[in-house]
Length: 103
Image (tube, rainbow, N blue to C red; front, side, top):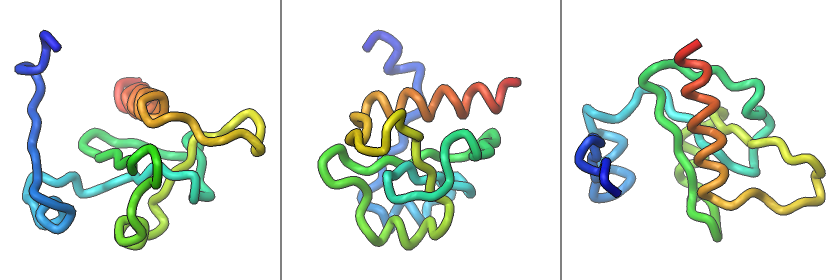
């Protein structure tokens, strides 16, 4: 990627190191199929963080517990359909957050 050096990337050793980091966003939103609140009902603010699990298994249970009720799902056209792939989900969520923050 030709813009990689324009990004501020912070890598943490593990979840615990991330949680205690001073750079961690205060407000975190976990995107998961195990949520009641939809993307359309979410309120994003500048500085919020978006969390996504891996494509095969989602986020570990300890992260679900940590975020508590701050979990969001991306609505599907038909509830019988499988979840969206990770890259598509990240794109949808990121641009909805940007839309809310910049309008």
